[in-house]
Length: 134
Image 1 (cartoon, rainbow, N blue to C red):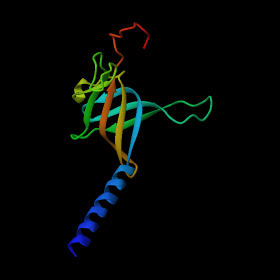
Image 2 (image 1 turned 90 degrees about the vertical axis):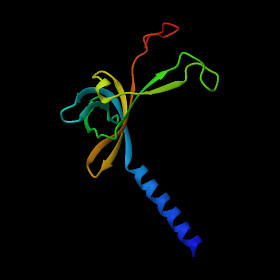
Image 3 (image 1 turned 180 degrees about the vertical axis):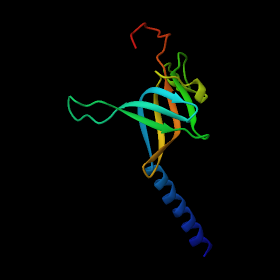
């Protein structure tokens, strides 16, 4: 009896987790506006290619107090695997995110409404070792 209850609880947890995962999606593009008063950001995202008239889509995404913001950059030092160029993440505050930043925003979908779960910001590196263009 205890085994059946435990099996039921674990399977319900796994089903709930996959349902939650199915309700999240990612959007990537250029941040055009961060409205701290309304707690939203606007992302300029290139949608699916539908031909030469395809244009970017403006996505307005609400932020929540739980939204995690990270700066993702390349390391110039050797990482745990022993090679330079791995990615390093550091926490940012929403106030440190600026229009012009490139970001990937993971959102939770609640019906037709979105809310930001996490924001990964990528900024051009000014200290490229080989001097290659960005």
